[in-house]
Image 1 (cartoon, rainbow, N blue to C red):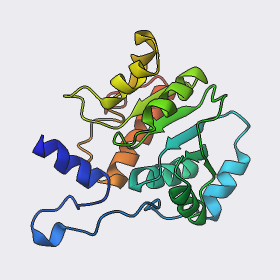
Image 2: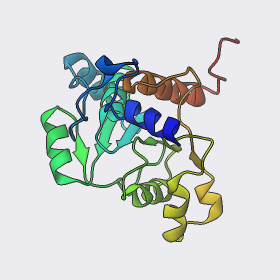
Image 3: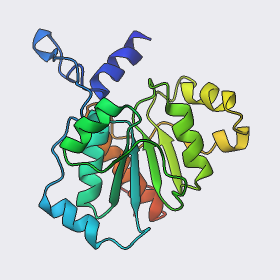
Length: 202
């Protein structure tokens, strides 16, 4: 479990992937820790047709910040869902479009929950599944049952619907840091949309 805790700390930006005393960083603030979308990504979002390749990142944090930036660069319409008002305000200041809950209609969208420690994850996943999202996933260690299972069961979500939640997320590239996890996740989503295996075989 210590290994899993260490991996979580790296993923959430509390500790760097390096080793040794110099690797320890200050705890990640609530705001999204990634560059705010620049002019080019914003233009790419505006050019995307309505309903075409939409990515919804749930919960502000280092991974969601990079994921939203990279997805915008790739032409996705992007949206951050953050129920916590303070974190939402910080994310808005960073330039991200923010909603307090998963929209009622996310048909065709890819929904990625980037923090499995949040109490609101069950509601977010339930709403994503009910909203007919194309793909729903949550970060986490595949060797342990995720907390989302119990959370969804407590909300009365059917086992068949719970099984639709992907975990882990992204391609297996050995990613540990927030930028690497975001790259892995986005690459996996693109591969899935294009019905490709996501490896080096063609």
